[in-house]
Length: 194
Image 1 (cartoon, rainbow, N blue to C red):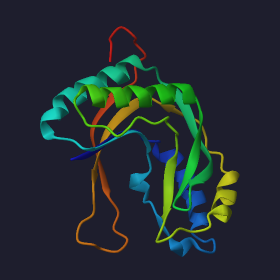
Image 2 (spheres, helix red, strand yellow; image 1 turned 60 degrees about the vertical axis):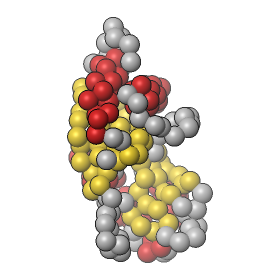
Image 3 (tube, rainbow, N blue to C red; image 1 turned 90 degrees about the horizontal axis):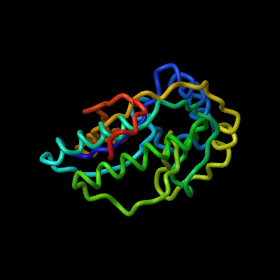
């Protein structure tokens, strides 16, 4: 199964993002982007890819330990940017040091549980809102529109393990379905090693 560790913003913060994405979808060239659906709006901490079922018990234990060691913190969605001419995203502000720490702990938890992870890269917090079709799109006007976006702050209190179910059958516009398969409260206790 395809898994990743994530922080999922609460519904009220997703409503705020939904308003700005609605404006983005009315801009010229918006039809050349494949917009991510609201159920897929999350901050990926550690993408694990395909994980064997037998690794799940150890992975759950290690992610629970990572959550147990990390204190709750606050974030807000704001601004935006793009990766090349392909991915459009909104950014994150707030306690980014703790967010990065949680991402590093999630990555380490997966590795220690035996998950074959990609090469470790510096974590860049973002929430993808759209992806270009084909060769890409000039994303400047979309980034400009996102530039003024300032979401309200929310407390991050949970680490989620999410399963990504890829669409089948080649249906145009079909999106992955996301299912939370585990969640652990952030508790900020350093007594255990991860």
